[in-house]
Length: 114
Image (cartoon, rainbow, N blue to C red; front, side):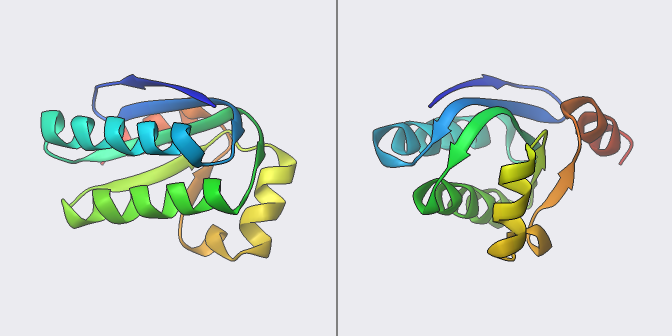
């Protein structure tokens, strides 16, 4: 898994590849921490359009990220998840935890209007 962080209002983290946790998950958490320090929280879009597979460690990475952001008064939304990821979120009931959008553009627009 690789990722790119774009600061803004909202900030966007774009994930690519297989979200399987491990060392990449730790790098993601560190980058998220830096983003929170630099921006003071706020809204973050996690763009999943480039993610082909995710396991429980990847899900845990997103849940931990959500908790970190929420503790600073912000929130994370997900965008661009493929059908398999949407099924995984539904099966684990994380679809009730995360607000999801069909595309990055929809998520940015929704968060920008708040």
